[in-house]
Image (tube, rainbow, N blue to C red; front, top):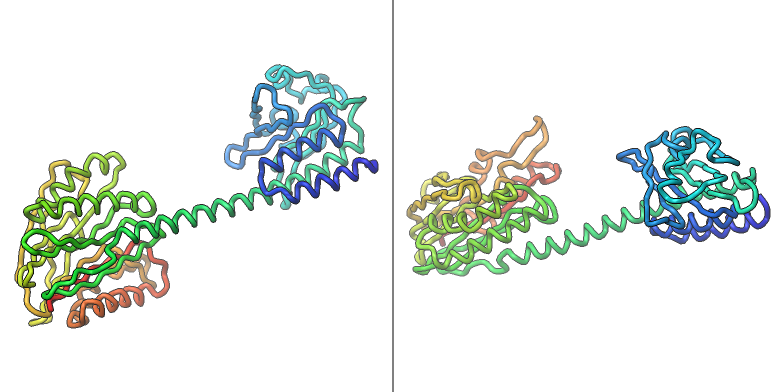
Length: 415
């Protein structure tokens, strides 16, 4: 390499080291490659990791066209397949050169120098070409220069790709944090205050955003309503649907004459949207009268609620007929009722509790029986203490295994 080329390479290395964008790196490579070896044009082909096709990036694009080649096809494909350095004084005289590319671009290649690009591990990631030396043919010095530039370019592209992936992860993380904050803001900020009943509630998504929710409403005849819902799936999509379901329930809660009517209305409103995206939502809702003596309840395909009887220490399973929302457009629902006494406790929960995974046997689940036993042990506690006790029991069972589903719980205790 002559002094001019060495100086130019040092300069381009500094430029590449300063760039964090793949597009900027590509632009710098193509421009400097053409200048350093005194060529009319430079072309860079990158290997697509999934399709194993070569896609061109041209310093001076003709009609914005992009050339796509298979590894092994044409001169660039040959170098990508073999890792050879190919320096042709007469491109058209070599059978490896594909003239159709010139025809496609309206260009005439006379001389061409093609070198492989390798990542740190040695894998070929692309090909760098210089076309039509301004005077004569490409020299051994040009080969050294282009090989050195290709090596620096490959490292710079790898660094830029890692940087962009890191930036993308940060953007996704930030977006999920915002989505999580929005979802949490949709949950009640205050628990209902009544003379007859005390409440406790929590929702812990498995991901930053989940499909579980709970809500409270004051409805007709002075009754207080509580609901726990669970949208199929996880992540942002489930979180968006959760917002729709919650809004529908809250809107109709003030008008519905029964909990069965409430679920029927929500199913009609949401069915088309849920069916279109092949999703559904389950829910269990309870309402207690002003005196805390009568409990109304209805289910839309949700986990059975647990009713702890203080007088006997027994736990009853509450359930009604009803499909999840979004399964059938004309689904019907059922409301039932039971009496309550002082100290009785109702527990609503999502399947993130019963389906919690623990150590030991493969796919060991916490299960309904364990949850019933925990409610029986701790049912005498105040609402918030009971909630904490149930959450701690499931956490101990999981023994550090990552939470696989959203965990939502609502406790309603008669004073």
